[in-house]
Image 1 (cartoon, rainbow, N blue to C red):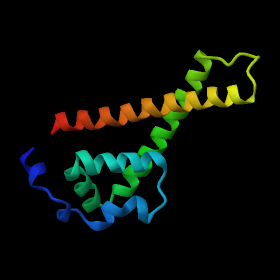
Image 2 (spheres, helix red, strand yellow):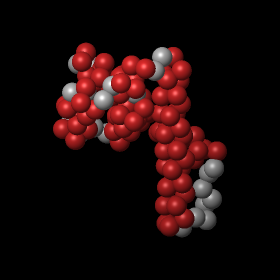
Image 3 (cartoon, one colour):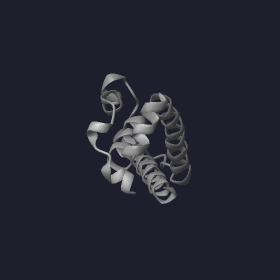
Image 4 (cartoon, rainbow, N blue to C red):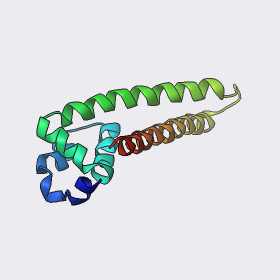
Length: 120
């Protein structure tokens, strides 16, 4: 924990801090990157120094995007839309499924960083 406290923004390579802006990363990769900046600068620095930051973020993007799709489909199966739904009701139902999946994935990202804090 002491090493994490003494790590400053100046210790992190600028490319690592600007990676989402420099490359078109997906939503989940940007969220993981944001969590790295906010919660685990030492891990961000290690990944950048090893040259594996981009690969790590892309792997997390794929994993979390798949999880979000699975959660959305699961929610839709558990909460089927009535046949009487019109266009706007179906849009709201679909958005609710997307919101549910997003909230669950964000919770998973938070839990991932909480668990990594306990390890170190």
